[in-house]
Amino acid sequence: MIIQIKNLTKTYHRHDGAINAVDNLSLDIPRGAFVTITGASGSGKTTLLLMMGGLLRFTSGQMIYNDREINLRDEDELASFRSNHVGFVMQSFALVPYLTAVENIMLALNVKCSDKSKNRKRAIELLDWVGLDDRTTHYPKELSAGQQQRVAIARALANNPELLLADEPTGNLDPSLSEEILSILKEINQKHNTTIIMVTHSPKAADHGSLQIKLLKGKII
Amino acid sequence: MYLVLADLKNSGHVRLTELILKELWHRKSQLVSGLLAITLGIGVIVGIRSISVVSEKAVAVNLDNLGANILVLPQAASVDNYYSADIDAPTFPESYVEKILTSTLPGVENMSPKLTRRVKIGNHNIVLTGILPKSEIASKPLWQNGGLLGGHGGAGCAAKPGAEPAKYVDEKLQRKGIDSLSSSDCFVGSAVAQKLKVKQFDTLFLENKPFTIVKVLPETGTVDDDRVFANLHSVQQLLGTGQQVSAIEIMGCCSAISDNLLGKLRNILPDTRITTIGQIVSTQIETNRLMNKISLVFLIIIIFVGSISIGNYIWANVNERRKEIGILRMIGYHKRHVYYILVLKAIVMGFVGGTAGYIAGTFAAIWLAPQFVGIQVNPIYTLLLTSIAISITISVIGSLIPAYMAGKIEPFSNMQED
Image 1 (tube, rainbow over the protein chains, first blue to last red):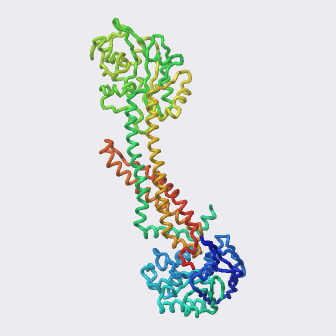
Image 2: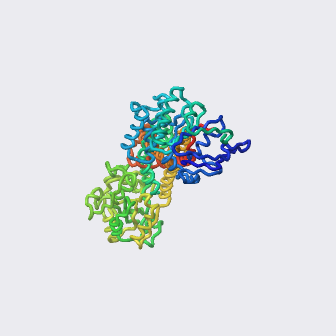
Image 3: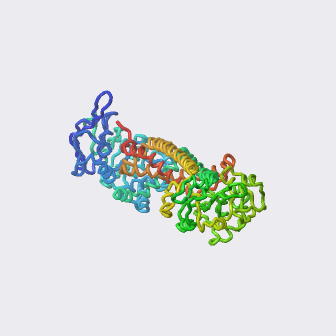
């Protein structure tokens, strides 16, 4: 198993009381799986994804990554966990607007290696792999939505993560571009044995998953 | 600290620097408005300082017109003796002047040794004072205005920027120094001239020796109006005192007086009585203090306003960049990288703002000062470094709280939450 989740709970405290976005949830994710998480808005799917990516602290429970428990109290350990093991693909692409496509990818590479020429070479390779070798010096606003998402995928792969987390990666794309992005994710999963966990509203996209999870009020149904 | 820096280096701080510069360039208009406050603030400081340096010199010249401010008297003498010129007033060796001179004390701008005695001229009791003319004239701008020192500017600290040695003109040391008052010449105070009914080039008998009046001094409103001045060495010979003087008047820089110049003089001349002419010294010191305080008040205001302004700009910038900071945190950058990015940005802004402020303030001072204050201002190049240092300090202080708050931005800030 790449991830083992035991009795995970995330409670949000609001003015009108506490809400468990994820409620005593247990889950094992096998290495190399393509996991899709679906559910209605507010079902806790993104919260679960954030916690698995070390982006959000859970209230109680345990998360084991590669047989090692994640220490939520250590900020540096969480940051290192994210840079070394996880790649993220977001619905809104999450690209830095004043950096070119190649610079956005180099930004992620730069966390682990300060060799500029090596990073540039790797970033161009990744852009080539996602079919954007002719868009290296383009800024996000000069790219289409599909192209921006491909840059985001290339950035997510920059440090060869074992785990790729995608939050509604096709949410802002038309059906044909959605298929294109899904096929890239599928290729990553199959060629590199990268574990992919994808949150989606789309049943069609969810059908790509080797393990399909549906959430309702923070619980798996 | 080393570990943090080493970590930043391993994490490619060079790229973070590029990130800062690209972000600044990306938001140029915001950068301009952010820099405006600090540039104006530094410009005001530089402008005030550039003008005040010149005006301080002008004020110092005016203060120097008040004359000597330190008196060296024999141990047994009082300041009353100095003014009354008693016949039996004590004296001390003239060589004390050389003692002060060879000590090269900073702040001693001019020395006027003098021997003063009452003498009888006809039926009148007149005070005869032996002086070394150039030293005396240098210490008395009112005499200079009377034409006794043609083409020889003012005296004192302000008139001579840079450290010049104290002036003491002795025939043995510099013959030409007493050329203007030979052994048989004298100056006559305006009141004495009226009393004795004498004028320039008349002959005046002092202790039966003839002296030519080379100049009737202009009215000064001081005790000088009631005196006759002759060459110190002639007076010493005339009165049979040997190489003795009854006082040395010193024109000391008021900043040096504040810095224990009197104590240092007492160490050199332990058997004398050294005193200040209180009113003059206190006026000089108070004026300098006031000008320094005004500069300090401006500096404090600028630091306060500048820090708040930069803090406000960076705070707004942090809020606008919540998503970007979230992206950085999401892909593995640590909190300290976020601090580094914002503080380094503040340093870059401080550097640019300080430089721009220096240029703006200097040009404003050069352009405005002649029109409004009537003085000519030159650029003070050393202020550039000070401006940059102050500006960077202000910027960094202003950035600390926003940087700390930015570190609290969660790495999922760029994501949609369920």
